[in-house]
Amino acid sequence: MTQFPNISFPTSRPRRLRDKKFIRRLVCESSLSVDDLIAPIFLLPGKNKRVPVKSMPGVDRLSIDLAKKHALHLHELGIPAIALFPVLPNELKTPDGSEAYNTKGLIQLAIEEIKSAVPDLGVISDVALDPYTTHGHDGVVDSSGAVINDETIQILVKQSISLAIAGVDVVAPSDMMDGRVGAIRKALDAKGYQNVKILAYSAKYASAFYGPFRDAIGSAGTLMKGDKRSYQMDPGNSDEALREAGLDIAEGADMIMVKPGMPYLDVLQRIKAEFSVPTFAYQVSGEYSMIQAAVERGWLDQKSAATESLLAFKRAGADGILTYFAPMIAESFKEK
Image 1: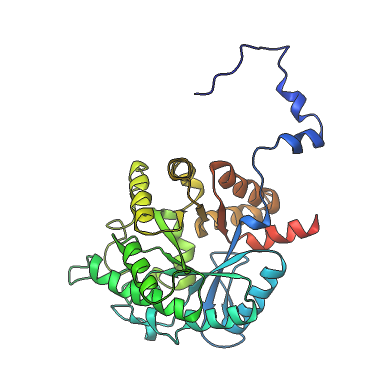
Image 2: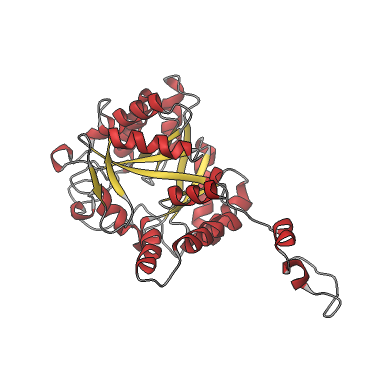
């Protein structure tokens, strides 16, 4: 615990360091910049398609051609990276999620198009099967509905290789299968993709805050058996998060993700302090939609509330933040 000198009021007046703007700037401990932002994009098949996500005001699903234009705009705002998530029609979904590794699939084609148009923009792609399966789980299930770990890993490896072939910069396994980071790293290296980075969702909780995201990608209505508590983490645990992060780092993860963000700031802080590796937070759909709902009712100021929420991640130790507020925050930096 920090030991403070035995000085009290009136000798000590902390407000002296708050009375003018210049001194507040000089002593500010945490700050937010455009360099901290990762912008998510939901992708649709087709052309010239823009479909709003009703549960996420201000967020749209985009066809590849519109996503490419949006990516260029994000790059011009100074945002360093985007994260891609697919929205597939039911006819492309199967029990084993094999569309995930189709080299001509929606995400793979989007990566090629976006990297061709905006080569300096980092492209991150989710690695998990829930957008691709008929049952909505992140992995393959057996007849009882249980998710099968090792068989799922084989498919996640194929998915990661297909993304690397398309030109992805970062694969982000969010499935929470044991051992998947090591298997993906080994496969990428064997195929010559040593520089494809792994952002591991090591601390991904079985959270109530994912509802709008599942609505956005169309998996909410397909989760037929059970829930995801057999592979996503218990919200009451934080020691377990350290163990998960440590295992993923040992297997070759370059970066760690904590998801959700705001309800798990303590976990974010512990992982960053324990491992000193690049650590990211995902301000998930439910966090975003809560703020947006209050904004729509006039209860909160959007820019102030969004900025404060993102600053909390930085204060807790986040090196970057995946947030649906990224375009709006980046625009505000341009206005300064």
